[in-house]
Image (cartoon, rainbow, N blue to C red; front, side):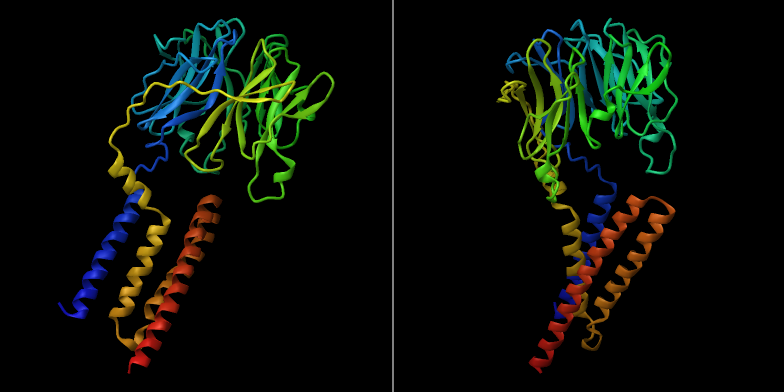
Amino acid sequence: MNKNEVLLSGIGIVALLLVACIGYLLFADRDVYTYHTGLGSKIAISNDDQQIAFSIFNNGSEAIYTAKMDGSDVHRVSNPVKAYHRQPTFSPDGKKILYLSQNRNRIQSLYIANSDGTNPEKLSRNTQHVTEAIFSDDNQTVFFASTAAENVNKSEGETQDGLDLFSVKIDGTEMEQLTDRDFYTMESLYYSGKDKQVIFKDYNDTNAFDLEDRRVYMADFSSELPKDYFNMEISPDNGLVAYTTVSEESKDSSLFEYDLYLKNLKNGDTQRLTDLNSSVVSPVFLNDKKEILFLKYVNWPKEPEEYKLMTVDLETKKLREIALKLPELKRDNFVMMKAVDNSVNGWTLGILYTVLFMLITLYIKPKKVFTPALISLGIGMLTVAASFVFAFMMDPWAGIGVGMLAASLLVCSAVLFIFALILKLYRKGAK
């Protein structure tokens, strides 16, 4: 084979690899949790402080487990099939457990089962996407946040529907929509038996739905919390509120760190409980001890998340890690697919794209050595224009994504111009 035949073969091979990678990125199921093994992002404690519930990722699924407070006696209590079971919640009497089941379309359904996992029953309807759920204090009613399932995979701006509060009996009967407000978010649900309210967080507001007059009010302590807070948890006696927010020292850095804070609603005092240089999620009060159980996001802000289960003493602020004595988790042979999944990314596309145009530059006539770089620059400029069209006509986030692609193409074009210049000078020197 002569030089031109070798270059043509190289151009063909690289072009096929580039098309294959683009197709894989567009159409393959690239769920970062497919090969992940580790703790999920939500924990729960039984009212007698004897059991904890959590979820574990393994082999492309997520199942609910329970354990004793010291991390021993771990049992799997749900059996997902190509689904993610997450966000467990104990009933006040400890006999039942709620959890969400997310299917491959990212729609979450609400399930109830005995605390040992037996007799699982679906409580929500197929038309609903549930984001969070809690029990009433009499163990008979479940309150949950839900939106229409059809809204789940829509882009921002495609729907005006939001989240609302629903109730249903534990046997699946008497489902009722309690609000019709289309809240932007509805999280950190808490049932106050004393006040007959369901308290929840909506964006930066803390709301309370009064079960007697069926209206939504601002919660009494809403103004006492910082503007940007997350993971709100109210103590069993309603006297304390735990939450996470950005630590002061990290506000001037490029990576915010979210630590755990405690607000005393009786005297107004606020104290910081952690300083972990990370992110704290899912704080839960113990009922008979002055402790909070929480998850430390070890590799913040990377995905998939890796968590450590920890507690903090509310008086001494002493931290303690709980080592879960998990059974040996069986791993399927995902080695080949995991290698492919990890190797196909934006860097791969950029390298293949640049190599392809470099080979074309070597192949064409010396007088046209800058033509491939100019073509690449034209593609980059058209992509810049397309980013504005996408942002205006479709979705701002889509516009940002296309804009990032345009920036990458312009960088590749700059590399190609440098390569073409070096090649031209080399050929000139060789003559």
